[in-house]
Length: 224
Image 1 (cartoon, rainbow, N blue to C red):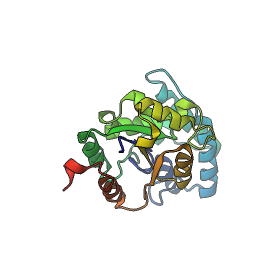
Image 2 (image 1 turned 45 degrees about the vertical axis):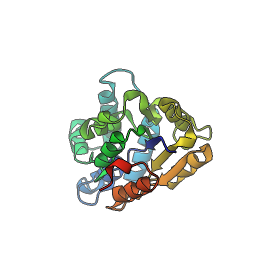
Image 3 (image 1 turned 90 degrees about the vertical axis):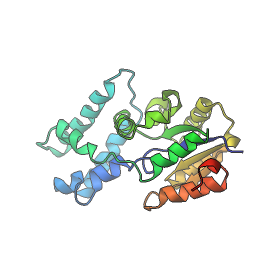
Image 4 (image 1 turned 120 degrees about the vertical axis):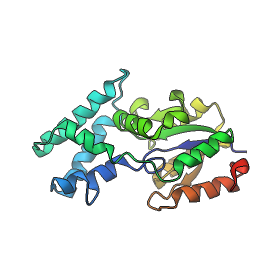
C-alpha cells in the first residue's frame, strides 16, 4: 500500500525555470539579448555547478545568492542589463504545471504524505515555493534539495533519496517518486523506490499522473 509520494519540482510541479528562462524562443534570455544559444547553455551549466550545492542558513541569504548568480552571468557576456532586471525577468517563468496544484490538494485530502526531492538552487526554489504556495503541502523538513544535501540525485550513495525517506518516516517500499528525467527515475529504482516518469512536455501530464495514482488506489475519495 502506497503511503507517500515524493515529487521533483522543475518539470513536475513547476515549469523548469532554467530551460524556459534561458532558452524560450520568444521571451528567453538568449532570444531577447540576441546571445548565442550554445554559449548560454554552457554558461548556464557552469553556473549550475557553482550554485547547485551552495546553501544558506540566513533567512534572506537566497537573495544574495541570486544576485551573485546573475552578476556572474552578466560578467560572462559583458551585458549592460542589471541583476535586478534579470530577477524581475525570472518571475514570469516561475509557473505551476497545469493541474498539479489541484492534484496535490487531492492527495492531501486523502491523507497521503508528501515530500520534495529536487536538484535545485536556493533562490529558484524559494521563488517556486512562494509563488506556487507549496508550503501548504510540504513542511520545511520534507523539502530535500541538492543545494542543502550537497549532492544531486545522481549520487551513487543515494543521499537525497535517503533524506526524503528519512523525512517522511516511511519505508521506501511504500513510497512513489515522480520525476520528469528518466535518469533520476533510474536512480530511484536502484535505491528501491517505485518511480513514475512525468511527461513534462505534454499538456496532459497532470491528468496522466492522476490516472496512474488513481489506479494505485491513492485517490479513492476524490474520483470525479
